[in-house]
Length: 275
Image (tube, rainbow, N blue to C red; front, top):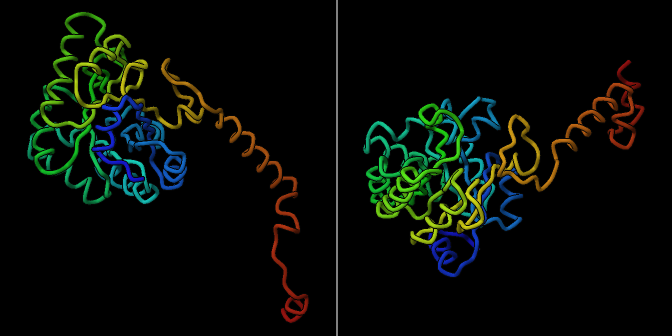
């Protein structure tokens, strides 16, 4: 059954947890969707796990459109959200609406996500008013990594906690239908989740959120450049892939691949006529 914004709202009201995973390609999107995951996020994390950048800042609108469209083609039921990349919405409200519209038109996604709280509430409102659902994102916002001084837990002291609460309420008031809470202390994330009417999706924010999201390469053990504390490895596919690649390399080099059953035949007379 196709998931929608209304599905998310109903799940929060009924106390049902929401599952979300990142994805960046058609084949993986099909598998995630068939597994029953509720939402797929085409995250600008593709800068790290797909393109090999040290952060998300170099990711472009064209990158997001390219990968977003591939994911949408692979999904039948999950709700697809596409990240708005760095500097695609920060300059002005007009720029934000234009780029959000471009993402929806070019990818076919159901919603967009942008980072920030009160400082982007006017962008969120304008995008929502244009008929595009928006997911907010507060706490650790990777596009602001330089301003934050690194990838650090947010909201540890009273002042920072109050700011996050204000940010969440500002996003809710602006019309965001869900809010990602990243690297926020679990008690604070639970408090925010219980004081806003829209679903919260946690990543490194404890079990008190209304849902969870992980980068799929992290939870499958495919990405080893970093391993955040909040990541649970649900499989170790990276090691299995390394072993398979090594076995392929060996089979090619020792001549055992391809074998006769993996090859095509033709009549010997065909070869005789070549001489």
